[in-house]
Amino acid sequence: MRNYGFVLLCLLAGVFPAMGQSHWRTVKEELLFLHPPFNNCHASTLAEDAGGNLHVACFGGTHEGAKDVVIWAGTIPAHGGVTPTVVATGVLDDTVRYPCWNPVLLPLKNKLVLFYKVGPNPREWWGMMKTSADNGRSWSAAVRLPANVIGPVKNKALVLGNNVLCPSSVEEEGGHWRIQIEQTDTHLRQWKVIPIDTSSKLDVIQPSILHYHDGKLQLLCRSKQGKVVQSWSADNGVTWSALTETSLPNPNSGTDAVTLKNGLQLIVYNPDLPGKDWFNGRSRLRVAASRDGVQWKDVAVLENGTTEEFSYPAIIQTRDGLVHITYTYDRKNIKHVVLQEEK
Image (cartoon, rainbow, N blue to C red):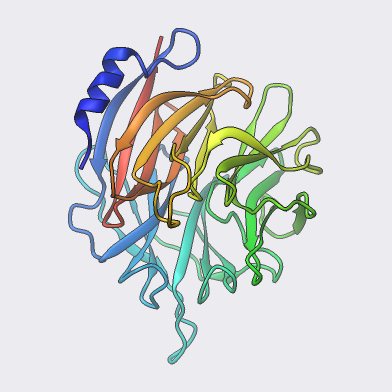
């Protein structure tokens, strides 16, 4: 499935150096589900709880959008595969059931939060939430978010003091995409929607949030325009700049990004331009690094396929400094890659 010769040449040519003299080494790569209990899965999310356990969730079922699609979650062990369990469904009553979509895990104080969506499609879905007080062993009853709130639509939220910034987006019936920040408190009770550049003609969804040493925040978004699109805030997310294109290509595919403890920014993305159909361009997956959010340099090749789908990444840094990445592995599994920075 991979072009291993290309990857070897990249290694020999030094494609992997990050910024300065640092290098990235693959510590682990594995398919998470040894015996997937579903035909199709997508949209993974990662979180480390207060005890240092690593959790993963995704949606899975017959196929994306099928009524039997539910949210599966499990703990990633040090050795061996994940045993996923169903933690949320779209069952409303004895006769009405909808598919679930895009889970997002958030470790918050002494609980683990699961955001997800339920509905017939992304234009009509609504936001849902559950919490766990025992590191994912059991979950609360589902709570529906306020009518104008979806929750973090794909990528993780950012906690700033007593505020939680959820990067969200809306896919309108007419086909236009727009992003918004949904701000809440750490008790997840009060919500405020912050629109971003509503007059822009750029179609953007699924933002991720980066933060910088000078206090600035940056959003990086999927778009229909062939580039990763950005917006900046200098006031902790209260107001945001106009949307502009970055130098990073985007074949209408989800990305995710993270700010490391040393201030380095990482983004996981598909490095191709859009093809003849929306699916094209998701067979190669890379990691790029930046110090300023403007100049990006590829530092790792995760996949170099041809017709497969390697997409919808999630990326976090755990307290031991390692970088964990999960992504859709041809819709049949979720792949987990662990990177370590070396200097």
